[in-house]
Image 1 (tube, rainbow, N blue to C red):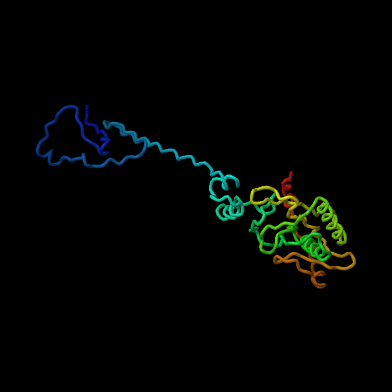
Image 2: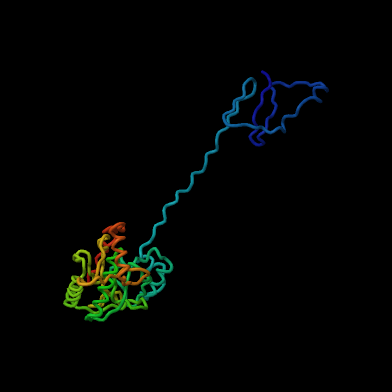
Length: 290
């Protein structure tokens, strides 16, 4: 059998191998090519014919990538209990907001508050908070009417009563009869709007407040007034007999002058704003105090 080449696995070179010993002359020895140090260059599935042994190169199996599970975000209570080493509920809320901002629910989704808690969200074009003592004066009702009108003429929003300018939860004391009277007085004031505002546009909620022991404080609430967007083609006024219109801009409720009212009515009829989805105003119900 003739000479053939065979792969050396350790050096990846070719070696010359014969079935029987051969004697070479001096000239042949001088002209002999030492192929033992010639590296073998090969590609996948190369086959050598004739008297060269077939060499097949197989791909080395790739190590499978480790499966990485999507990180699970712990809920609010789990973070407070396991990660935050304090029993003060106010510090718990503050630390949670700073360490895990995604876990701190937006104020619109809150179903209860803690007394003295700091509200991190600042006032904006769709969020207003203030503190008014109860029973509400006529001036307070007029102020609330202005804010409701401004939200109607923009894209809707929410008003929170019981949160002073320092953003700390204080609440207002309300009995069951007080809550009924507050709601009735508010809708009575809004009934003077032009165009008329249906009652399903405005919703009043009473969010309970907890003490430092996580127990609900009797008759202490944050009053949340949810105001849906009004008709984008119309401009709302707080009086039926005069065009006294407000609109929310730059985090304040601004009164429109006569020229601004005319321009705004024309703009709304020619190019009305997009209507905000009703789902934007479907906030969860407050916790039930037993």
